[in-house]
Image (cartoon, rainbow over all chains, first blue to last red):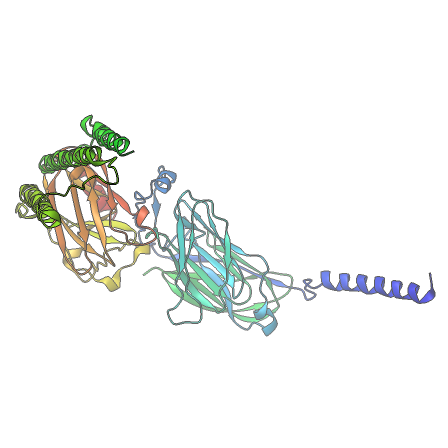
Length: 248
Length: 267
C-alpha cells in the first residue's frame, strides 16, 4: 500500500478508537457522589382510609376478593413510617445537576384498577412509562395545574395495548392522576429537578447520586403537604435526614 | 319471475313468524310488580304488528302474483280511486293502528310514571357520572345532606360532594357503589346527573329512565324477587359508556339491614 494510504488508515483507526472511548465515557461521573437516606414518620393516628368498591369492574373486583382495597391518602406502617412521600432537593442544585435527566423511565402500572405505585417521581423531561396490566380498558388522565405550563392529556389503553411514554417539561409537585373510566383510581406524578427518592412502606427513602454540597431538602406528602430541611452532603458517607409529619 | 318473488315473500314472512310463535327468545325474568303489565302490552303489540305484517306481505305477494308477467300490450289496471284514495286509506289504517296502541298501551306506562310513590317508600338517591353510578342512603335521620359539587373528591370516595363537618344531615349518609334494596318494599329512586346524559336501566325491573343534567328525576318500583341484577347505562355518554354499570342487589329485609350497617361502618 502507498504510504499516504497507510497514514490515512492509521489516522482513521486512531480517530475511531478515540471517539469510542470518549463516547462511552460520556456518562461516567468523574466527581465522587453522595447519598441522602432517612425515614419519614407520622406523629399521631393516620386517618381511616375508605374502602373502595370495584363492583362495576368485576375483573378487578375479583383480583381483590380476599383483601379489600382502600384509598391511599395516608399509609402509615406499624412503626409510624409514612409511605409514598417524595423527597427531593428544592434548593442548592448546581445548574448542571438540575439539568440532568435520567435516561431510564419510571413506570406507572394500571393493575387491579389501581395505580402502582400510587406516587411516582420523575425529573422534568424524564419519561413516565404507562402500562396496562388489566383485562379492562383504562384511560389515564394526569391533571396538572390548569393554565399551567404542564400539558394536560389523557390516553386510552385497551387490554393488551403496548406501554407508552410521556414526560412533563416543568416541575410540579405533584400532578394528580385519575382514570377517566374508573372514578376511584387516583395516583400522583411528582415532577422535580435533580435526584429524588420516594419513601417505602416503612417510611425509608434513599436519594443517590447527590453531588457534595449544601441543599434544601423538601418532603411532600399528598395529605400533609411539604416540609423542608437544610442538609449538607459529603462524598462517601451517606447523610441521614428524617422527617416527621403531624397527623391533623 | 314475479311469481317466484311472491312465493319467496310469503315464505320469508311465515318463517319470520316461527321464532316469535315458538317463544325462542324469552324476555328476562320479571321481578317487578309492574312488569306483568308491561310484558303483556309488549305481547299485544307484537301480536297486532305481527298480524298486520303478515297480512301486508301476503297481500303484496297476491298482487305481484296476479299482475306479474303482463304482456306489453295488456291493459294496465288501476287501484279504484287512484293514488289519492290509497294515501287516505293508508293514513287512516296506520293512524288508527298507532292510536289504538297508544291508548291501550298508556295504561301500562301510566301505572309506572303517572302514579306517585307510596309515602313510606324507601328513598335512595343515585348519581350518574362518567362512568359509574353511585348511591346514597339517608341514614337513621332519614334526611339527605346537601350536595356541594366543588367538594367532590373521587380519589377519596366523596362522589356526591358531601360536607359532613358542616352539614349535620350528611353525617349519617351512606354512600355506596352498589344498589341494595329490600325485597317487596317500594323504593323511590331519586336521580340526578353529575355531568351529562345517562340512563338507568334494569331489564328485570322493566324500568328505564334517562338522567337529564339539571333535572331532579325519579322512578319508583317494587322488586318481588331476591337476586343480583345488572344496572346498565343506556344513554351514550362517552368513551366509557360500554363499561358504565352497577349492580342491584335485592335482599331480604334482614340481609338488607345487615348490609346497610356494614356500609355505614365503612363511611
